[in-house]
Image (cartoon, rainbow, N blue to C red; front, top):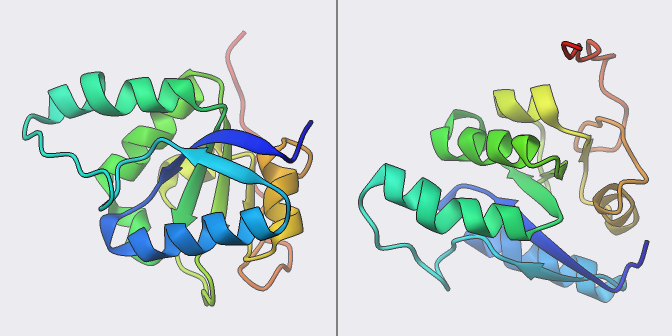
Length: 157
């Protein structure tokens, strides 16, 4: 797969908007340009109805992307929106990659990421790009060491 351009949706909490810019800059400096369809302070969502936001704003943006990146900070775990976005991406058979925020010391990850994620990587451009391309599928701590073994997901036939 090409490292050149990727359509992504970056799931995050809004206080982490600045980190998204850093993440996209890191990837661009290392040969991958990401076209991000997520809602952030540059493209705010002013709708009030959760159902409208899910069906008319977020779903089409998630569906458009080939990959979902989940920006992991301490507040991410408790975000109902982040978990909903991950579940939507899973239902659309998207690659789902967690990326620890720059300088992270670790924290709990959203339940949906633990359940459906393909990879969780630290602030390392090569690993992030490899995971976004579906070539790296490990769960790591922010420092790059491997997490404890995770249970294998079972799917009904």
